[in-house]
Length: 351
Image (cartoon, rainbow, N blue to C red; front, side, top):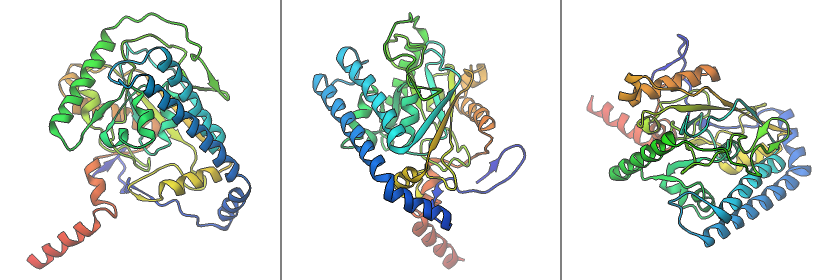
């Protein structure tokens, strides 16, 4: 695979994060926090998560149709759920959120392009930018608990194994984005607009507006990485040929190790949650970049559009870009090594 940035070459596997405890000082911190702090944090987190799930359950009982925008009581419950999710991460895991810049209105940038995609903690980032519509694989929404919550974002669901399903999802993205781009919304008052956590973390954008659909949030990498690079962007967010707003996430929970990235190989979800709770604090910085308006060539070539947006985001994050894709993850981690060893053996025998 080719990896490049500012003329430099590197070869880091983006799909591995071991999160090892390899120093006595870090081990002592883990022991101390596990005994005296983690039990309280875990209790708080579980309580917030349980209450959030109950609200999602009630909202689905009121109306189980998630194919149209939320309104009325379901919208109020949805706002409350998002505040609970953010505060659950703040009080239960020790996150602090800082937001730089402003989210563009939906009629200016109907699609929000977020990267890097690294973890289940991205739910905190997603809620912090106003919880736009989620675009995700079908398995996410069939999960027993988290799936019910995700359905309230009026999601666009993709069946990656079905070509026709992917085509329909692409059409839904284009249709909703076009409707948003063509809308002329008027500002509306909301009790949830402008709400803040700690200093600069805005849960709901002060520019709250009424639209036929929420803005569309897409993680174009399509899978989680260890944030050492931006892998190939899938073209789904760029097929409509409409302006997009890039949003960069910087997780500052890496001292002394990365306790955020949930990759194909390495630390498990439970281990990362435990190590994150053992940190004194974990920081997330969210950067709204200027809206990227495609030129005529980019409108005709969504892959060119995707590459150019990725390069802008990589330059801002000061990390390289690479040609790795979701498909490569299988062969670069423990999932695919037996198959690769078998293939190598066959090649040697054939030679």
